[in-house]
Structures are given as C-alpha cells and as structure tokens.
Amino acid sequence: MENVSVAAAEGADFAENTMAQVSTISHTTATVSRDVRTTVGEIAAENPRMICRGVNVYYNEKHAIKDVSVDLGRNEVLAMIGPSGCGKSTFLRCLNRMNDTIDGCRVTGSITIDGENIYDKSMDVVPLRAQVGMVFQKPNPFPKSIFDNVAYGPRIHGLVENKDELEHLVEHSLRKAGLWEEVKDRLAQPGTGLSGGQQQRLCIARTIAVSPEVILMDEPCSALDPIATAKVEELIDELRENYTIAIVTHSMQQAARVSQRTAYFHLGDLIEVGSTEQIFNTPRHQLTEDYITGRFG
Ligand SMILES: Nc1ncnc2c1ncn2[C@@H]1O[C@H](COP(=O)(O)OP(=O)(O)OP(=O)(O)O)[C@@H](O)[C@H]1O
Ligand SMILES: [Mg+2]
Image (cartoon, rainbow, N blue to C red; front, side, top):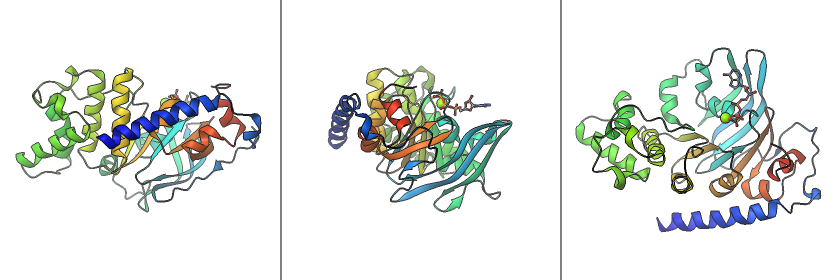
C-alpha cells in the first residue's frame, strides 16, 4: 500500500507539474499541422496484450472511428482523451465487442488479444467479455447483495466448484478492489446501498472476479467526488501490476496521474499517441496541443 501511495503521490506531482507546463507550452513544440490525419507517435507498445490495426466503426452511414491502429501494453494504463463525440467510448467498446449490441453498428479492421482475432467468427463473446471486462461511467451494481454482485460472474462462468471456493474468490476480489474492509460485515446487504465510490469499487471487484486480462473503463470517476476518485485512481495504479487497462477520461489531470500512455482522439481519428509525459509536455500534433492547452474541446 505504501508503494501505491508513493506512486500516487508521484503521479500527483507529475500531474501538477504537467498542468503547470501545459499552460506554458510554446507553439514550437507542436510540429505537425492540423490537416495531417495519420496518427503521430508510437502506436506500438513494447509488450502488447491487444493489437488494433485499421479499425473503422460505422453507425449506419456515420463513420465514427477512422482507421485507428494502436496497441494496449501489458501492465500498462492507456488513457484515451479527446473532445466529446470524438469516438472514445466507441473505440473502447470495440475492444470487447460491446458494439455488437448496437443496431446498425459495424466494425472493420483487426483487433487481437494475445494473437487471437476477437472479431473472428469462431470467437465466443461471452468469455471474451470476461477476459476483457468493462467498468462504466455510472456505477451499475446488480439489484443483489454485495456478495452476489461479485459472485455472479464466477457462478455463470463456472469458475468455482463449491461454496468455499466462491467465498474465497469473493473476498479476494473485494480485497483487490480495496473494498473488503468497508463491506466485510455487510456482505448480505444490497450493493445499491453503498456510496457511489463504493459502488464503483464493487463494480471493479465484479469485473476482477472473472479473472480478466484487460479492464476497460469509460469515465469511471465522473460520477464520484474527489475522495472516491482518489481511491479509484490508486486502485487503477495497483491493478496495473496484473492487468492491461484502457481508461477514457475527460480529466487531463487524471490521465496524467494514472496512465503511462495517452491517445488523443479527434473527430474519429487517432491523432497522436505516446507516453503520457510526452503527450502532455511536448505534444507533436497541433490538435493535441490545442486540446491539452484548453484552446479546443
Ligand atoms: N449508438 C449510436 N448510434 C449512432 N451514432 C452514435 C452512437 N453512439 C455514438 N454515436 C456517434 O458516434 C460518435 C462518437 O461517439 P462516442 O460516444 O464514441 O464519443 P465520445 O468520445 O465517447 O464522447 P463523450 O466524451 O461525449 O462520451 C458521435 O458522433 C456520436 O454521436
Ligand atoms: Mg463517451
């Protein structure tokens, strides 16, 4: 826990410095002009878990994601930022085929996890969505007890053989989500009775319980107060040890605090991707600079 606090503190320092520097970025740092639409920066991760190449998404006629290629690295948090409507949630949903549930939505290109194409006809989306779990903007516990919220996934995926194993897994998942101490005496009470921040950590515990490899988070803190946000951010940093994480956020401070790489989207294009430090301190594309300095979006 100490390491996490140190990491969080360092992250906060970096975020603070970053924000101070953002306001003083000179025009000379951005060298690629607005009309260049190929992704600037390093799309490849050193040790990729997921590889996306030439991904396009259409909602009927609307072209919402345009030829996006990027890797998600192991033990790494990738932050996705950009103005409202630029396609962050759409792209995130491609990563576990959540877009399949939207009428008129079509995805092309290739997305692999550990070398396997998730859009392959033979891919079963039920285990895929356990392998690539998702945490939503608004905490959405099931109308069940705290215990059953976490036990639900392991039960339907047949991950445990008996009651003991299940209890063990529920405790383990709640501990990993940093919630165990707060709920261990009220496991039979409804999950919806927890505070917003606790509910979000319960949803994270529920995701972790089915042993995912990747966790997708779409603005997971936007409904939380600063204290609950800090807890979830600390947790994200801790989870990075075992999982690959992609997080959509509107908060540049949050992106700076929790991520190692950042991807900037604009009108369906992936404009720039690189180390978070580089993106915030020396953006290479004019559009990235405009966004992080608050001139746009
Ligand atoms: N179900 C849908 N049907 C049709 N168009 C959609 C649908 N969902 C999103 N879009 C469109 O696709 C584009 C990208 O939307 P998306 O929700 O991915 O953006 P976003 O970057 O997540 O925005 P925000 O920051 O506001 O959440 C937008 O123009 C949006 O209107
Ligand atoms: Mg969104």
